[in-house]
Image (cartoon, rainbow, N blue to C red; front, side, top):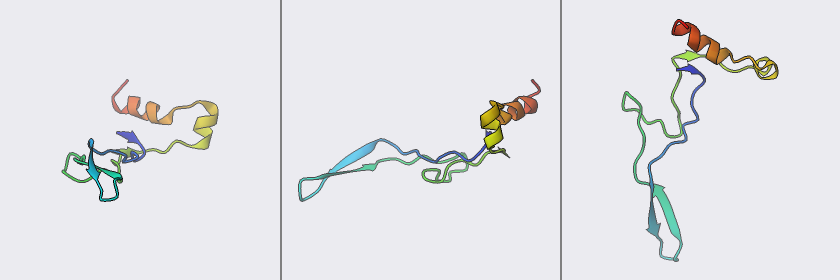
Length: 75
């Protein structure tokens, strides 16, 4: 992966819990883990090649992340 750390916004399907006051609390019933069995929810996945998008990239329409990924795969 090339770019920056992912947002880490992952969780399994939520299960509802009925509380004594009649309200419902929902909590994820599963959690996602990375390839090394590490928690990634709220943390994200680190890229193999860290390459942040700069303001100049955004203003000129240049996609440095895509260019780097293509160069790594010989295209």
